Amino acid sequence: MNASEIFKGAGLSEQELDHIRANFKEVAYPKGGVILDMGDTVKYQYYVQSGCLRAFFIDKKGREHTLQFAVKDWWISDYTAYFTGGTAIMSIECIQDAVLYRTSRTSMESLFQEIPRLETFFRRKLERAFASFQKRILSNLANSAQERYLAFLKDYPQVEKYVKNYHIASYLGVTTETLSRVRNEIAKSF
Amino acid sequence: MNASEIFKGAGLSEQELDHIRANFKEVAYPKGGVILDMGDTVKYQYYVQSGCLRAFFIDKKGREHTLQFAVKDWWISDYTAYFTGGTAIMSIECIQDAVLYRTSRTSMESLFQEIPRLETFFRRKLERAFASFQKRILSNLANSAQERYLAFLKDYPQVEKYVKNYHIASYLGVTTETLSRVRNEIAKSF
DNA sequence: CGAAAATTTGACATGACTCAACTGGAGTGG
DNA sequence: CCACTCCAGTTGAGTCATGTCAAATTTTCG
Image: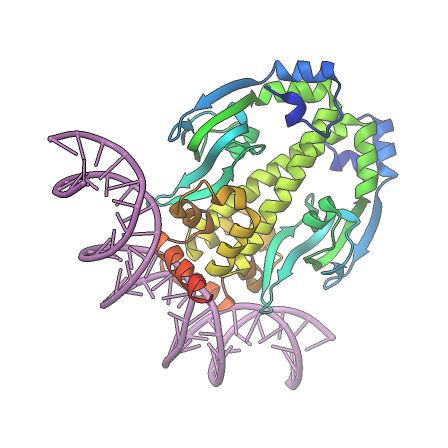
């Protein structure tokens, strides 16, 4: 595991990186593999070294809603459960074969106490993630399905390569049929 | 300003609280007052001592979308701009006369370096806020207008007291007419 | 009280959903 | 190399939830 890559910019010493490294474990999953299932206790969060995953929620009508995708250098978990200690309301699956580095909440909390710069590094990551989720809420409230789809393509070109249209539809909050029609409209307008 | 109340549970000494206190400024705004306007540079975040505020976004069709309400003991800002250093895409206004304690990004960053426990305290706050925004995205994707309204009443009874229905509508992502019909339906079902 | 603001109601329009059928690959195995 | 199947995506027809616009009603507050 290449910790100096993961924590690039955090200003950590080699010794600190070694200590951090000891708290991560490399795990590999095949395409279709399930990292986390609804109802599970959520001990870990995952850094994506390679591959593509998605976190999704299944509602009472059986519809899937994708909360997040993750590709190289992203972090993923059911953070509601991970942070608060509850059980997962989401599942996480691999869309492509994946290599992940996982770490537990308790490991991270001790590391934060020992290495304040690591806590700063993660706080900043969390701030950016928080801001991007706020933007997504506003985008969902303000924009049409077509606008949201175009914004998705623009913001996440690395993700678009790996995922099926029905995954994108469930992220945007529309059905596959609607997304298909949206794509048709866009194609016609050229 | 009562810092021991704001940072209750952070495990800070009196001396630390005094130091923190020096980085906050009490400000009062009347009902209708604008704390922050779209386009402004966002230097501050605000702790709500009393009153009620809302952060909202105006889209290109002129419709308002409420991202967040804030009542006593909540924090508010345009966090996307506050964290990333850009200009505000939102405005924040007082729904009720408000007393706020404001602090700047730069103050907080130095305080975090001086008092790691303060950074831990804010990181945990941010984690909870992050989790609740994730839940809101899922709720918007999975639930009907009526379900979202009922969930709002249940989750934020303190907010509901202060705000107009059209504020709630703009938070839920429906028109005032739709919210009115939803309320009518709910009333009929009793 | 009276004006302005907020909410409700009605009639109609529309974007997105549902369900069902169909199309077009991408494998797989004979 | 073809027939078969599976899966993703598309298309069509009808329905439904919510939006739009206009008007009526109720509430708020100076």
